[in-house]
Image 1 (cartoon, one colour):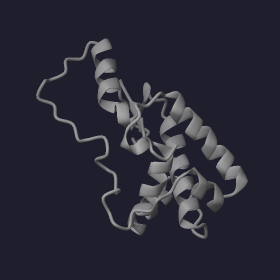
Image 2 (spheres, rainbow, N blue to C red):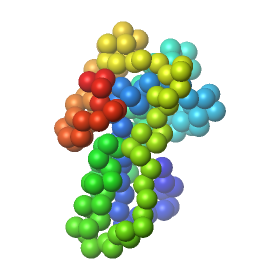
Image 3 (cartoon, rainbow, N blue to C red):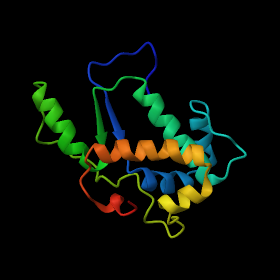
Length: 153
C-alpha cells in the first residue's frame, strides 16, 4: 500500500488464489491482523475465517482503488510482470532472482488449516460469501496457471 502523496508510473496488484489466501490469513498473528484492521474493516467479533475473508476482500479493494496498471495472479507473476515491463521498454536484468510463487505460503506448517470454498461458505454470511464469490470469479478470469495453490477450486 502506498501513501497518497507518493505516485508511481507503474503499479501491479498481485493477487493470490482466494481460498489459499484465506487459509494463510487464518494462521497469521494478531499483530498482522491489527495492522490490517487499521486499513480495512475487520470485525473483531467475527470468527477467524470471516475475519480472513473481510481482510482479503478489504485489502484487494484498497489496492484496486489505487488503479493498478495490471492485476496479476501470484502464480503467473514473474511471466506477466516480465512481459508487461518488456512491452513498456524496461530492461530486465538476467541476474534477477525471484522467490517461488508460494514464498508467503504457510502450507508447510503442521497446523495449516484445510480451508476450501465449502468451509468458507459455512463460516460466513451469505452476503459476504456472495461478494467473496465475485472476487473468486475475477481471480479465475485472470487465467492463473494451475499450480499448487489452485487445488482448492
